[in-house]
Image 1 (tube, protein in one colour):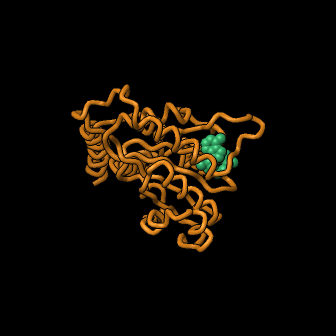
Image 2 (cartoon, protein in one colour):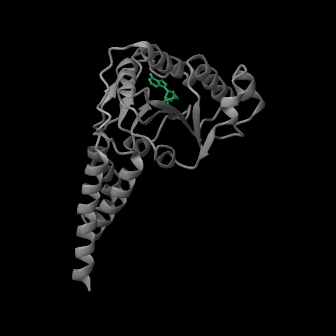
Length: 241
Ligand code: SAH
């Protein structure tokens, strides 16, 4: 069985945090990570709305970026009311729950800020998107209500014996390895002035990262990819001397 971390990014309203924590208790999920919450996470209103699940609030890990929060995770789903203009697998809560249960390591589900949702750069870091099917002209759910739907599907599947696990011999790399690879790849591309038009870099770089985030790589494959770009970096340095 996998272990699931819930990550809330820049949550703005204490009552919403409390209501998500309450839902975590309802569906037996205990690990919470908060990326730059906009208030003290032990706010009285958050505690009241957690309906007694205060130990999860107290135990929350605080992080300064999503990248840091997902470093130890293999499969990360961002949740969003709208499908963004990027090549990212979009799953129903049910299908996402199946995939999360297939992997033995640590996985995460990410929820965005109430007003604007997650940034495209943050969604790029995730392996896929969960979109709860809703009325297309009124698609934005309250964050805590969205969490209930997603947690319910995850919980329901705990008793489902039909899930084919990914072989334990296949050791899927955590996102931290991807970050190391991305840092080196960016250095190579910067050095070779790959972007040409500098204003185009943010979008091009997001698209390139999406090629590598949506697929699961093993530790060995990630090492190989990083080794290739490290080698190119070293050679370039030699030529420059
Ligand atoms: N306009 C924002 C809405 C933010 S609502 C957006 O496009 O995402 C706050 C959070 O609730 C979202 O970041 C997401 O985590 C969750 N959420 C709201 N509606 C959702 C839906 N239909 N499917 C999945 N998650 C949803």
